Length: 333
Image (cartoon, rainbow, N blue to C red; front, side):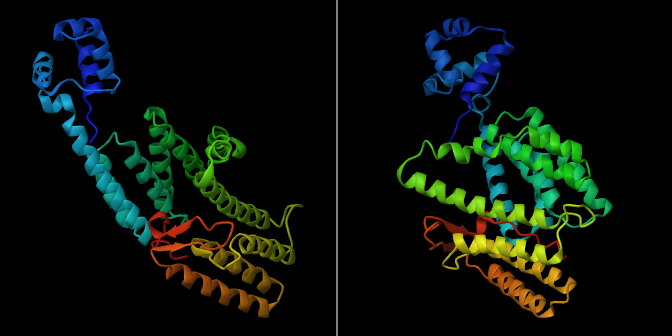
């Protein structure tokens, strides 16, 4: 259990406009001891806690940060619940859960970040007024987090998600501005850490990067294929089919044993896209074949066990875990 004595001690000392030397003299300890406590590198003897609390006119519970401890424990339970809901596709339940949570814990930035993400996720394919309000609310929450939060991991994630919120609200310029604040791919933590880690840790990270880059490559091909056909850069239906097939081939390279796991979702969508383009050119045999494959992969994805290891050589240190995969059953498109 993390105590908050250090930061509370520093806060109370500054409220009384005391230096660390002055407080040390009052408490009969060394300057180094007070400095160490405030840095969180140690705690005062338990016998001193009532004396320190009385001096500042607060309770020992306040000095130790018991409210913060209880709040964090409550927040952790809520985050676990929202993660479980996300894995089951219960996004509307998450919205209700997190809306209440951020009222109770208004300065918990992880709760706020999850609330924003769920607001965006709930209606990703709906262009209703509620959809626009959700995106705007998510963007406002994200901007607040970036203005106040000092946790760099939360900040980086929220900065990336803010691009989606603005893009879905039609604010392309703001989306691009937000994207420009992110590090380029080869400066990301995943790429940099490959030069630092060794042994099994390096193998596992490298496999995670291979899987991530395969998905990213698939996304690039999908974006390439859906360019506006009215532009000179547009592709014909036949070319689009070829592009989608290359994306499928990439997954076959990485998951050569057929252990696609959560990438079954991507494969289902790719075969749907092929079916659509095949219909446009009158290739009904390919359209039906692709639609059947899309349905097959979708059913396999929905019937995955909670945990399933990969066996293909490029990813055999990884496993699928349903708790880390979000679904959205509010989207019926």
